[in-house]
Length: 378
Ligand SMILES: *[C@@H]1O[C@H](CO)[C@@H](O)[C@H](O)[C@H]1NC(C)=O
Ligand SMILES: *[C@@H]1O[C@H](CO)[C@@H](O)[C@H](O)[C@H]1NC(C)=O
Ligand SMILES: *[C@@H]1O[C@H](CO)[C@@H](O)[C@H](O)[C@H]1NC(C)=O
Image (cartoon, rainbow, N blue to C red; front, side, top):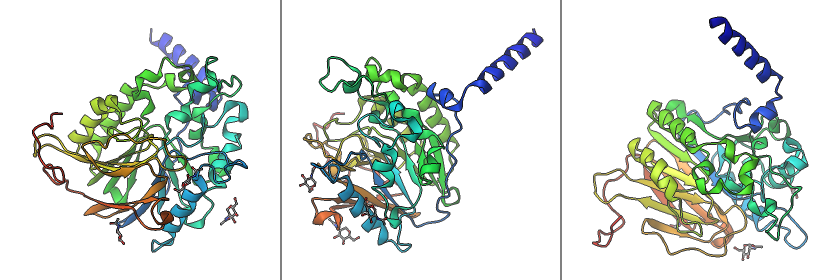
């Protein structure tokens, strides 16, 4: 019996070691994750947040739908910090449109990585670690694999987990991307939890693009990981980064599935803020529950890395500021507060903040700035 198990284990080990790491990663398992980069060891911490960015630059759109203009504005802002650079950049996903790095373009050798990342963010103030999650477009898009779609391109196949491969750091050492990862800063006073939110959108699963890797992931696993990572955290700041937000006023309007699954963990562990993209907007929301003593949290939607959406929705009741903007967020974190400046190309060309938010570490109770109202049933 015991011998049988040992034989089985040895066989399994042999099979696993025979698998090339990339193939193992394609199963959504194995594959050594990227190493934790060097991050600030004390306050104040300065970083920018950008999402939904990697575009092709073509003769008729040389800025790649304003990706290069947002990049220049972000670089200029980062250069104004005392060290003349950001400490790091957070990417909220949808890194390479339309379907992420591609198998048919060589996966980790895909030239898109250079064209849409390395060559666009080449300023010295952004020559710092980039910390990224995957967005739904990094997993694929049905338009490419559905013969009924006008954009059907059967030979273009997504390689979502290529973005997680440490081999990419040989091409550009700034690059870091994970599915689910905790990053610890400031000697343990700050924990950033990166989480892969696409698997929570379970309605993606019947679509053809789910077969490129999404269907090897499971939201239950991600949620369990986040629950245990938050439970183990002793940090005074708990910040969460995902592609999809819980609430948003943009075209997609936030995720009811994330509100039902992830949001209870934000409350339970008193995480102060969630950074998201997905809607190609900039928005600051303050989610406050019905009763003043219940926990609340802030959402920073920063999905304006390039092409803005064609429409914005009705502002959500939790929305404090937001709109269809190409831009980014610039953040400063101290023990007391997280200040977030939203920069939009529409406001002084992205040279001045269009909105400032101050998020206290000890979240204020109550509904402020929203006046109580009887029809506020939630
Ligand atoms: C780029 O941004 C400007 C200013 O916000 C806007 O007017 C323009 O439409 C954008 N260009 C493209 C190609 O999206
Ligand atoms: C960044 O790349 C652009 C062209 O893509 C080039 O004009 C510029 O000089 C480069 N900047 C740096 C700092 O290398
Ligand atoms: C945001 O704060 C900066 C100073 O940090 C200030 O110059 C600017 O006017 C503020 N902008 C808005 C829109 O409140």
